[in-house]
Length: 126
Length: 182
Image (cartoon, rainbow over the protein chains, first blue to last red):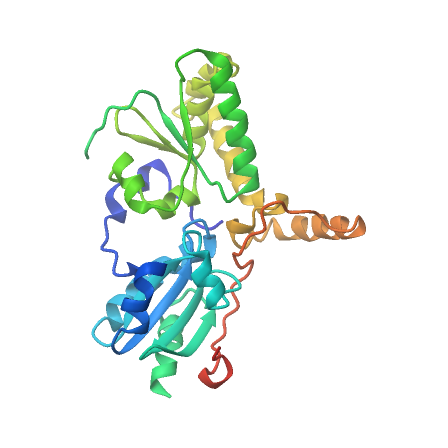
């Protein structure tokens, strides 16, 4: 299970800023499909251990790309219909949109900032 | 830290993990059998980070899923083996032996250390028992899981009442844009 926080190292270390906004079925159209510029959507759920491993790295990537690209998350536990519509087979899955169209997707990328940056930037660079 | 007075400790459990659900159900039953006023509240972690933060502003939903959390009435939190010890202290059927966890020998609490180890093993071994949301098992658990899967395959596989949509591995790959448009 990787690192397990202990009583000692738990306290306020997690008060970091959440740079990824959550979109729901009701806001997806407005924020993602009608959104401007490159948009990355992470289909995830909080109970998914892999998503937890990815989280710090994707937050870092969101910070790096925030001037050019926007990252949103969809919680598939709350919005299973969205996940089904975008054929998400499991979490985490990243889907890249440009002007409302899907231009790339990746499932379960290696949890590493440079790999993740390559994944989210590749569709827009090519 | 904001301190909220709550009537009893709150045990948070991972409702996407079969092992955790089973243990939580057992704890609930013990609590209900104990007395009229519950000595502990048992609730799933859920999917709302803000709701959890309302219980304790230092509570992070990712951490809540990573390890067992017990929210104490004074606003503090107990994690892992310490949380398990506190849960056992609050159950009428188990509290009789929990004094052992406080025994200290040269600054080391041997029974608490054993409990911590037992919790760590249980947390690691959950994927063997069908916790699909727990991610890739630790290296030492993988051979056990292969054996369990092999044995299950001999008997026609195992039925999972709660099929999960979490990946069981993290393949490092980048798909080309042309090949993965829906």
